[in-house]
Length: 251
Image: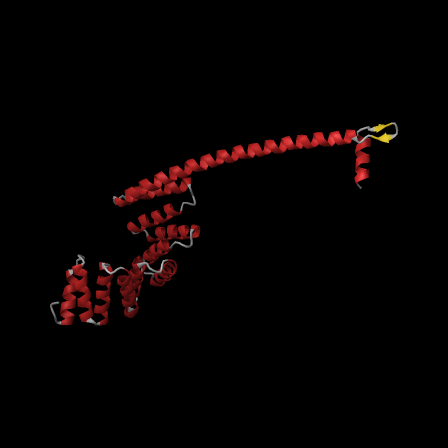
């Protein structure tokens, strides 16, 4: 097969000399073609690199602009200007549609103004990008909690705790969901875990005081009320009055 190909190339090039095959012509032709092809490949690679560099520079610029919008949005959010924060997070996402932090932060902003469906949508988008974010699962659980969807909330808190098993905030939040479902023992267990992890977690003590009260364990409720007050968190007077009446003691 190799000889036949050479012969065909020689004849195609008109390369018979004194009745013999001229192998130099097809050889030279093949080399020229190879060189031309090499030039084409180099040119294509160069163009590809130029395009890649231009694309990278464009993406880098967009990424930096998105970060700037995210930062300003965060500042707006800390000032309570949630509408402005949402606008900036939205602009960041237009520049970088896979921006995890922008989805997560916009979800927080939506939740802050009571738009829980929008918050859940953004948290879900964030989890599609990073399904290993315990914080986002916790936040989505809070949105479900505020909507009264306690099963969904507990499911998200469970996932959050699988990822971040030492999250006192998530234990406290799941305890709140159990409390709202009337599962007082589970609620007390979660509040207790929260204060075990974070001994000065005043809100968890306050929530456990409420759980003990609803279970009818007034002495334990008073203990947690006292601990909460020692940590500087005020207890609503209405709850104090209810506890006094139910327990028959002042404190």
